[in-house]
Length: 291
Image 1 (spheres, rainbow, N blue to C red):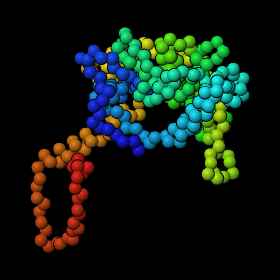
Image 2 (spheres, one colour):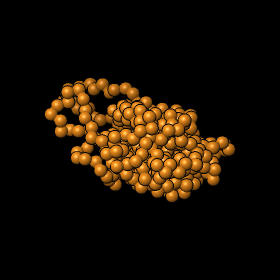
Image 3 (cartoon, helix red, strand yellow):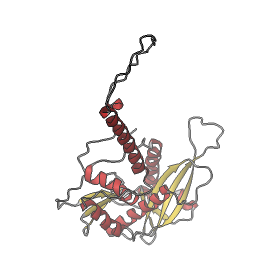
Image 4 (cartoon, rainbow, N blue to C red):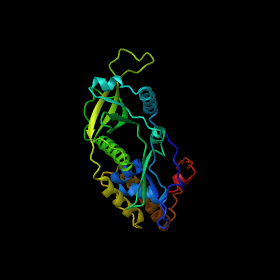
């Protein structure tokens, strides 16, 4: 489980500062998913509790980058591109390593909102006419061959992710194709045995990006940041739903405790003719049991 930093002091928005506020691609997506979770994160440093890291996905990502970097250095077409009939090569640029580095990535200052937008791409390819093609690596293990994206929450997030990368590169003066690709590696489950290796099927899924929503969303995001009122939670936000139920349990237990302590107590009458056996119960100590 990732470490939860309950006292984060960095990357918190200061309404009185004139410095550009840095917002990553993932934070924009957080705002789109739930304004309240974004506000608690950006204004108060209270982030969502993260789950375990996808270490296998990270390993696949690193190996794919190495593989495509060989063709990048040689200026050659990768066999996967040829298999899909794509006349492309990995894009060569001196800032490629920076573009792919978390917390740096491709950056652009959107002046109307005074927000520095960042996004770390997985890869960029280029066609014969000089158009850049954004490529995002995805690793999973699903039944069947992956050839299209569905309309789940995750897939909608993937689409927004690619569109932000396309927008960032355009703002940096590059000619960017509306078509990007998700390079999916899908772990096969039908092998006879594991034998110390996991085999993958690799597919390319095209996406025709539309970044027209981004600048409007950045302005809404900035209005959210400067507002002193706590935004409404998104109706579908599982994190906010959990927190509300959690707080309700604590409130109810605190209410019961208060009613118990204020109720007048009367000593029961003793029956001298009847003796009863009692068993002592040790009550655990600690704040968990104070409610």
